[in-house]
Image (cartoon, rainbow, N blue to C red):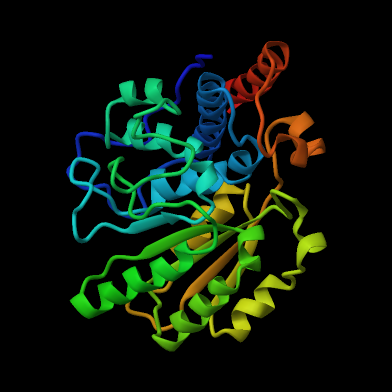
Length: 299
């Protein structure tokens, strides 16, 4: 499953990875496909996992961790780090390789993914894995937690930002909208919600279960600043996150990233629900690996 790596986009030797690190669009596209390839490998090893949900947010994770977030991988609890909460926690499979690459833990940990006693599982656990700011399980609670963390930053006089990645199906939970209301009430401009709006939840199209559109107008009605972009366009993602108002601003920000569930693998894009949770048989796995790695060589 190896492909030639691009020039490094992380600097493991630096004490602090500052915001807005230099990286080219080609490197970020490569990194997003690398996340997809690593996801295939980890799911194959675990015996089951979430493909299409992880693939829809691969570019978002790549841009956040290789360009946007202020981090100290060698010091996961550094008080001034930017926080990241994975609301759609079932896509942690795509986050583990990134954290290992940045130096939060040894890459050897990846070989234990999904095994009993492993710190790396299908959902992140803040008590087991470095680099996880809050755990995930039942979806819908992490925006509320992010509001508390952002408010805590304000009270302590720190300038970190708190980012939370949600799915659009997750927005059907009432707790999310209570959190949205609280965020604007407390004027938390240091809070950034990124919605992976791929149009599906585990049960099918989000519109069939409970319509949440128009997303932008709904967040604006709750007092948020909204940007709506193509969530697979790494240039649009980097530009939008580079242009965020300062953490001292007073309106929380929602980035609605329009994505495609299963992005990057043709058969999964055509049948996204079928690959929400599953396992590739060997022949299909070879085809998927060939499709992704072939594209990576072109980046």
